[in-house]
Image (cartoon, rainbow over all chains, first blue to last red; front, side, top):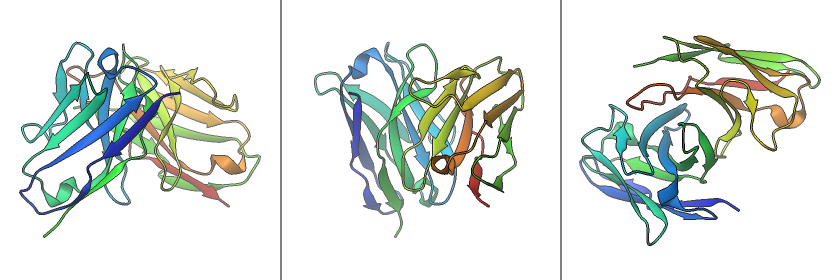
Length: 118
Length: 109
């Protein structure tokens, strides 16, 4: 059974950094496309980033240059390093396992809340 | 960037109704469109991909159609568990910028 468990969210001041983790089970992270999607409180879904099985990475314009997606194959875990955080980055962050030849999200974690506030 | 719109943004319906939600892309995306269902406090769930292919385990009352710029999600006979918010998402763009529509909330009349 595919499972995704996000951790690492919390309250952080503007300008700060945070690293989110997504522990996967039931499949191999490095063999799949993996994404991060976020949802601000009361708002819709926003695609954030994807890492392809070959290692290529892509970002939404709103986070490019501030966020970095990566994975640890030995731990079967996906990460999102978030730097220079802004109030508008406040959201629930979901990791997702994607179809490995397209970009749609097959499985989702339960999400972790990141609150950027002073 | 490809922009996605959905209509209506919300509506009320009754159990047993046939409902249709529309999604439009700002440029052609072939059939690279997915639909998700999200209930309050829960993660989204994939319903349909490739515009019309039902994800395994999703009830057959859900169906999708369209290609190019105009797409629809239809629920043939609304059930109580279908009251939720529905999002479309394009995954056509390269480099990837997999934008979602703003969502359509379906609630109980």
